[in-house]
Image (cartoon, rainbow, N blue to C red; front, side, top):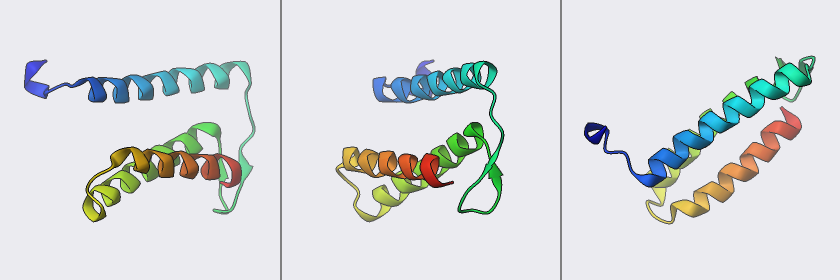
Length: 90
């Protein structure tokens, strides 16, 4: 996989995504949930909220790189706050 330029942060990132998907799959099997309606006005499940969180976090990080350019760990704090908000109110 040398052609993909895998680094430790890249491997950790995709490992975390894989772990999240596994955890959410187990949760869906053990504790089925009914969709709930949040501030977006549409019904969402845990998986929907995870997808919204991942997509929004990608845009937060891209915006951070474009506007600020450095100190990416601070973008992680913003992403975590965004994730908490999405899972709480969406």
